[in-house]
Length: 205
Image (cartoon, rainbow, N blue to C red; front, side):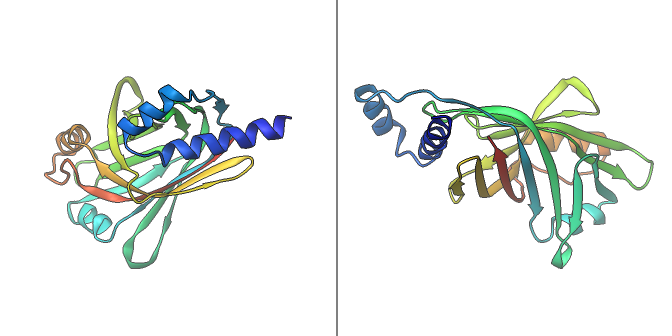
């Protein structure tokens, strides 16, 4: 019975990601109410692979990106970097539109090579309803801002019995994050809407 409920919850959750236009979906939901499963997130990882040229531009501005434990980074071909963050928890709800959140450990530190200024972004939280990823600046819980907008137009969804994988998520920097980073680092490097790379999230439920 537990396995049946888990499969049903995963199927319902993925179906909501692929739902039709909001108007038609709302009308259908009003006629045939859906059960609301609440699925806890038990683990997994989220990775962000930078697009071509991003790392080169950051380094050319005198800024070096690093991950903070327990996150990790890997150097890929053509100068791209892949940052991987462990999932620490959260929950996914089968409401319409899709709702829920995924929490992460670790972060990214941007270090200015001249002057020693550093900005740390950590405690990432993916908000499914808002299609956003937020984080806190320099370990200050009061300084949580929206770092990335998440584009799901071309995303791929792969449900399993105990997991959901969402890949090919477009990751774009928000204006608030770009302004905060430029000001802190003293560089005119980032701008709102700048595509940083492609993300993949694998959550265990």
